[in-house]
Length: 374
Image 1 (cartoon, helix red, strand yellow):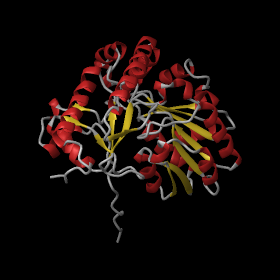
Image 2: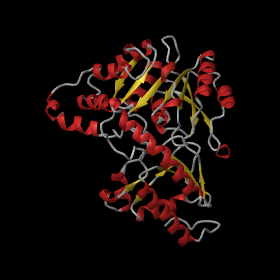
Image 3: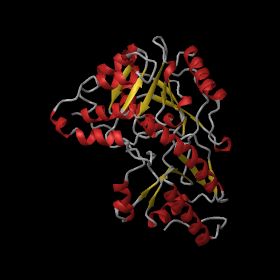
Image 4: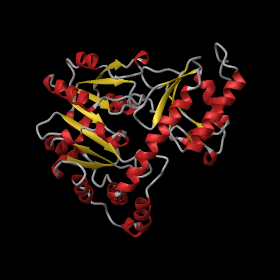
C-alpha cells in the first residue's frame, strides 16, 4: 500500500491579505499592507500599456524559451543567451536549481527567506544553519561563514537578505564566492532585492566555468507580484540542467512581454531608486525615535523590527484593529514573536504607521512588559 507523504508546514509570506482579513475580521480592500515588500510606485506606465494591449494574445501559447525576454536581458547584463533561464518567479527557478544540483548538504545563513529551507528539505537535503546575531545587527560574519563551508555542497545566500535587510559589500561577496569555490561549495546568490542597490550585484561575475548562480526577480522592484517573473544567470551547463527540468510554457506570454517592457523603462527605475534613497532614510529615523523598538539597518525596502518588551503579537493585533497588516517574523529560524518586518511605503502611509506607534505609546505607557495578547 502506498504511504502518504509526511505533512509539511505551509510557509507564511507577506501580502496574504485574504488570510489577514479572515483572521482579524476586517475588509481586505481597506487594509494598509506593510507586510508585502513591493515597490509602492506600482507598475510602470510601460507595463500597464503592454498589459492592456495584450488581451488578444491570451489565445496564443507563450514562447517556451522566452527568447525575446532573454535576448533583452543580454542587453542589460554582460552574459550570453546560453547563460540565462527565464521562469515563473525566482522561487520556481530556485527549485529547479536545487533539483539540478542535487546537493546532500546545504548551508543557510539564517534568518533568511523561508523558501530556501522548505525547498531543500523537500528534496531531502540536510540543512546546516548558521545563525545571524541580533547583537551584531544581523550583519553577515564572513569568518563564521568561511568556517561553516566545510563539508557543504551548497550555500544559498540572499543579497540583500530577507528579512534582515543585511548584505555584503560586492568585494566581500566575491571573496566569499572564491572561498566557496576552493571548498568545492556551489553558491546560489538570491538577488531578489538587489535592484534597490544594483552596485551590490555579482551577476556580471558569472563565469562559464564558475560555481555560482544568480537568481533575479522582477516581483519586488518592478511591482509584478501578480504575474510572477524572474530569471537565473549561471554557467551554461547548469542552466541547461535546470531548463531540462522546467515545465513547458512555465513563463506565460503576457509576463514575458511585460518583463521586456520594464527592463527597457529606465525612467521608472531611476524614479524608484530616487524615492527609495529619500524615503528609507526618513522612515528609518522616524522608527528609531521610539525607544521601545530595535530597528535594524536595511539595504532593502523593508525593516526588521524588534519589540524590546518582547510581546509583538499584541502589537500585531493592535495594528490589525487599525486596518494595518505587518509581517510577523516568528517563523524565521533565529527570530521569535518579538520580531516583525515592515515594508517602506508612500510617505503618507508611513506617517500613518508612525501615528499608530504614537497611539500605542500613549495607550500602553511603555511599561516594563506589555500586557498579554487577548
